[in-house]
Image 1 (cartoon, helix red, strand yellow):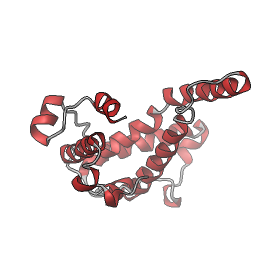
Image 2: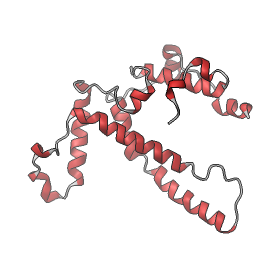
Image 3: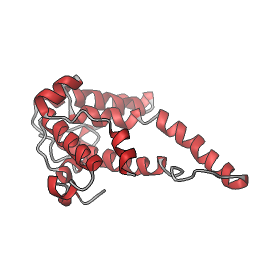
Length: 181
């Protein structure tokens, strides 16, 4: 993860694309009513254990855990031995899944710098790309849980609302990135 302590208007002003991405992140934090503290966010510190908004999510996660067990074991779980789902576990759950997602993200860009290849070099990159397609198709397994923890009430925003209410920069980052080359 980049050094978030250096993320501020001044340090990112040299790069328009970085500056706009920074502003977009701040706007999203505000929209989801999360304090701007990226390091605390990554560690799940924005989660309030006693927030009743998490009750339905905890039930869903509990049911998902039960579905992973063999049917004959589902009725015999002893909740006193740590199997139960508790709100104070959400922070660590988020942290584990977020770190995993970051690592997977870096793996999915493994071949990004390869412009041309042949022979076994091409074969190797085709195989990694083949597996990466499968991984990308299944990222929802992790992403859906992360999203549910960030916004248990499933908030959604129209772009115009993000721009008007939260100062989200509505810019063409691909164009800006290309101009920065």
